[in-house]
Length: 391
Ligand SMILES: NC(=O)c1ccc[n+]([C@@H]2O[C@H](COP(=O)([O-])OP(=O)(O)OC[C@H]3O[C@@H](n4cnc5c(N)ncnc54)[C@H](O)[C@@H]3O)[C@@H](O)[C@H]2O)c1
Image (cartoon, helix red, strand yellow):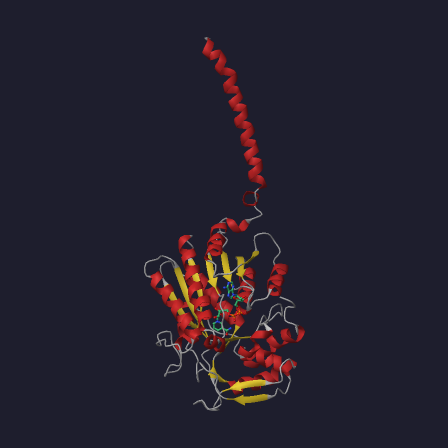
C-alpha cells in the first residue's frame, strides 16, 4: 500500500457514510411531503382512478355533477370563485365523501390565468367538466362584456391550460341559447346557431374556440347544449340556491319557489303575445339528475381526437303557463302571477330533438314529469329557506 492509497481509504468510507446519511435524510423528507406519503392524492395520476376537475362545482348544476361523479367513484376537484355558487353545497359533498383522495375544493377565479396554470401544474387531472359561468340571459343583455369575459375568455384560459398540461378530455357546458330562435322545431344539433343575446353569443364563441382547437388536437371533447334545467337531488342533499341579488334575472323555477315561500310577492311571466298556443314562451325543461347522467355518459364515451355535440333536453316543449300550473300543484300554493311584456333577448319557442344523444350515448331523459321534478326541488327549498345559509 503506498502513501496515496492509505490516505484515500478513510476518505471513501467517509463518503459512503455521508451518502447513506443523505439518502436516509432524503427519504425522511420525501415521506413527510404529502405527495409521497399519499395524503395529496390529487397531484398524482392513479391507475384506475379518473380525476375530474369540475369548474363551477359550487353552483347548481356543478354541485349535482360532482355528487354523481363521487357516487360513481371518480376523484373530484371543484374549483369555484363562489361569485354565485355556495360553499354550503361543497360542505355537503365534503361531508358525504370525507375520505382522502375523493374530493378537494379549490377557491379561485378562472379569469386569473396565473392561478389556472398553477392549479393545473399542481394537480393531475384526467378530465375537465367546465360548468363555471355567469348564466342569466337578461343579465347578459345588461352586462355583455362581463359575459364575454367570464364565458368566452375564461373558456380560452381553461382550454390553454388543458392543452399545456396534456389533459385528455373536456366536457363543455353549452346551451340551447346558442341556437337563438330557429324557425324549425324541434332543434337538432345541425340547426344553424344564430344566438340573439350576449349569453348565447358568448357560449357560441366558446364552442367555436373549442372546435377550432380540436381540429389539430387529440383531446376528447364533448359539447353538451342544455335546455332549461330544473329539479334537484332526489335524496334532498343538494338544491338550487341562487344569490338573492340575482332574483330579478332569475330562472323561472327559482322565482316560482320564492313566490311560493312568500320571499317575493308573486311570479312575473314575461311575454304573453308570442306565437305559441297560449301566448307564453315554450321551453324544454330538463331535470338536473338526467343532465348529470348525460355528463357521465359523455365522459365515458369521449374519444381522443373526436368532438361530440349533443342536445340535452326531453324533446318536449312546455309553455310557461303549463310550468306555472305544475309549480302551483307541486308547492300547493296559489301563487300570484303577473303577466308582463316580453324580456329583451328572450325567444318564443325552444325545444330539443334529443335523438342524437340517445343514439350515440344511449342517454334519454327519465325524469320528465314536470310536477314531480318541481316537487322534489320544492322539498329542498322548503327545508332550506335560507338556501345553504351564509355564503
Ligand atoms: N341552469 C340552466 O338552466 C342552464 C342551461 C343551459 C346551460 N347552463 C350552463 O350550465 C353551467 C352551470 O350553470 P348553473 O345553472 O349551475 O349556474 P350557477 O350560477 O349555479 O353555477 C355557476 C358556478 O360557476 C361559478 N363561477 C362563475 N364564474 C366563475 C369564475 N370566473 N371562476 C370560478 N368560478 C366561477 C359560480 O360561482 C357558480 O358556482 C353554466 O355554464 C351555464 O351556462 C345552465
